[in-house]
Amino acid sequence: MARILKARLLINVSSVPHMQQIYDLKRFHSIDYSIQDTYILPTTEKIRPFFGCVKYFVNKCSINKYDYIIPTSDIFNRVIYALNKKYNLPGIKTEQIANAVSLKDVYYDIFGKLNIPCPKVYQIFDSNKNIEYDKIKYPCIIKPVHGTAGIGVKILFNEEQLIQHIETLYFNEKKILTVNDFEIELFNHERYLIQEYISGEVCSAMGFVYKGKIQIDFMHDIFPPSGQYPVELHFSGPSSYTNKINNIIIEYLNKFFKHIRLHTCPFMIDMIIRSEEHTSELQSHVRI
Image 1 (cartoon, rainbow, N blue to C red):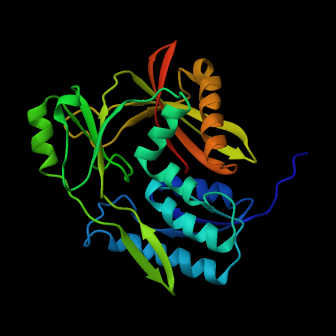
Image 2 (spheres, rainbow, N blue to C red):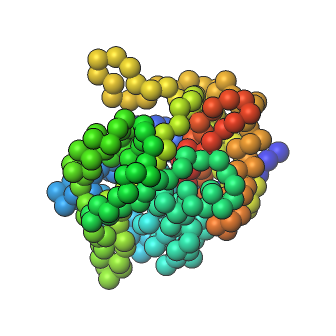
């Protein structure tokens, strides 16, 4: 019989599905969790709920000993990095790993070095907006370098649309939150990237890497929103591509995690299926 190890876990909850995962975990482990909406724009006004979640984590870690902090949002990875480093916990615990799993320009650059197919990045720019428009092909995608949940992501079909959209973007500098003399760098919209648009069906895989061994738990297909009020994506599982790209996903993840030296973490990976012979990694997430 498999042995189930009792662990004390800390988790930030940002959606209803995460609550179900907590109920499942609580059958075997001791769980402390903070319920906050972390899917917010990084403006001074809207970032305050996120501050509350960060303060909860810092205070909890100062009085309790945890075995693992479970990431549930890309924008929370910098916080978890700071806590893991301070309390010597497994997972995201170096600057290299924190950047690779939080900043899109960094992990797309790593994908390229490892020959992992992914959309081409045309430009990366900040508030100076120094953009070489002649190097961009359309349609294109624009997104914040440090973002989550599709916030700030938009498809543009020509140069006029791109120029107009860039004028509407919000820029802010890095924010440092101090809690009990403990400094944490928070997420920001300091830079954006312009990226190649690739069409195709989208498949997402979720699982866990433990001591370097990758386990895919579930795969589902993702469909774009439809109807008069398209507010969320549609999911269908198990994925129709499960048997076709399972080994490809494991190959890509093995390369990526070995390169950044991340040996234990949950993961999500989104793939664009252009054909049975051609798949591209859209993005990777170190979270549930």
